[in-house]
Image 1 (spheres, rainbow, N blue to C red):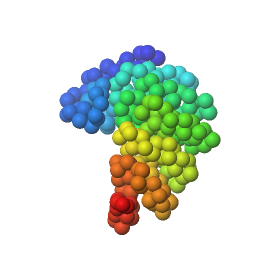
Image 2 (cartoon, rainbow, N blue to C red):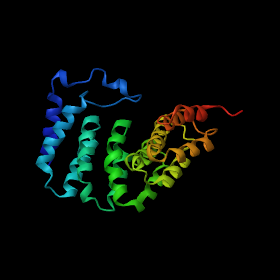
Image 3 (spheres, rainbow, N blue to C red):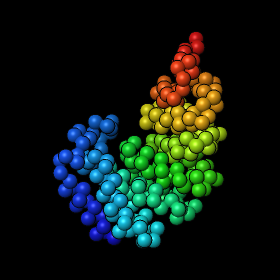
Length: 237
């Protein structure tokens, strides 16, 4: 199996300049380890290698994912996260512990966090909704990426109008978090919850806007009509 990840790395290193994004670092505040590649060729590469491994046991594929995550390269994490998502039909309840470990040990920027959590972890929660309590525990973590993961793992379910009470509870836990990556994460979650539950989200924002960081507030109301946004942004002296 090691030959598979090494073959992937060889190909990632060999891409021509036209497949690269100039100044990849500009998308991140923190220093990132990357090959500097565009998303499309990395996605295509991951799909090609998926065809070679999809019949392996789930634990073997998870081991390959962990190898890719552990390298630190953002593009390798992207491939690993997409492979994890493709396993969603084979998830078991205990897989949440694997996801937690990956986030805690290997996730170090928003792109890695969101690519894994929006889909693989979100799919897991849809399959095992009782495990949403794990996300509430993540929201209390000292690790900023676990706290962001607690929110962004519910992005897709939020768009479908699911888990609204849990979304509010997680937002409550993260409410006054000083980390802008976390603020943007739960603000984004509230924004997408507003697609189907706009009035509920608006009421939540109005009730809490005096304590809500402006970064999170602006994200949360982004999809709302102008009059709602104006009311939410109005200062109450």
